[in-house]
Picture (spheres, rainbow, N blue to C red):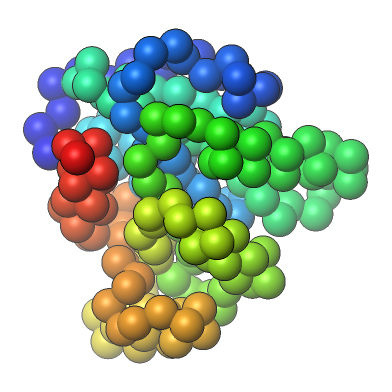
Length: 194
């Protein structure tokens, strides 16, 4: 997809405070420190539009980015980071679930998984939850540049099997090398153009 413009619009603590209007939205979800911000910046051909941090759990709100004045990419809070109080983790969970179940303009979710690791129980829960709510999603296996091509194929296949999905369901991606960017954009394009 050709990126003509991309801009941060707003952060929201409550899904009801999402930008007004009917423009399609595509959300990015995943564990803390999985590389959501880096992948979103790579997709948008920007270095720092989506804030990255060395501190996991930094994204605590719903962050909306308007792309080509046609649709939004939404950075959801990372899940699973243990070094925050339980009450705060519950707030993040409520934001994610509230947004995904009530956002009328949501067209799909890019669910990020670290390609080097087995899916966590929270990753499995998220896949089941998206399926239960009939939310279209694509699995993006991040940090593919840290593995050889053969290791990428093996890990992607193992993750898909563990999640009960067909082989090829996991798209290996690298924010560093640009791998998988075109495949993720293809899926996003299908969602926002329907």
